[in-house]
Image (cartoon, rainbow, N blue to C red; front, side, top):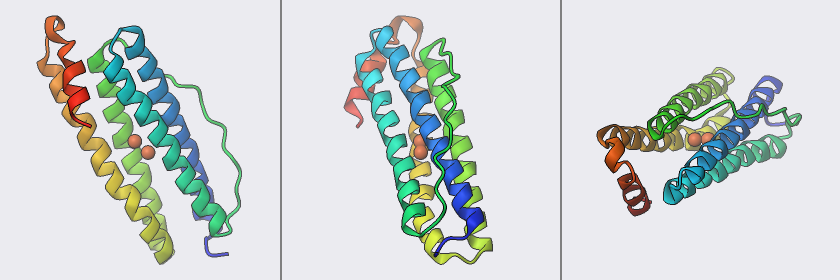
Length: 161
Ligand SMILES: [Fe+2]
Ligand SMILES: [Fe+2]
């Protein structure tokens, strides 16, 4: 096998984290849907689908490299969202946490001199830059909007893919 046992098991743990993120974003999407923010809901449904893709990417890598696969249990989403700002703050915190998890995987791949895994993980490192900056941007925007004009978020989010 091309992958070492410890890295395979850490990657499978990350599969669980990504699936967990997918469920968190699903819960946030529903919050916005219920508050009649359709475009913002769509944005989070899309985020949720992307997180599932991340999980699949990691899973397939472990399978391809001959690692042991045990599908992890995924906790139910914990986020009880109280406001749009809360939603983006929670999302940003989550993405910062995921970035640290990805860096941890990269550290292990470097320690093991696993160049294939480093190459593979590079994609995730770059993806996290995008994820963190996107959430930071929207959090900043939401903080500038007041309660009276918060629905402007709907226009802003629909115009920036
Ligand atoms: Fe992700
Ligand atoms: Fe993400």
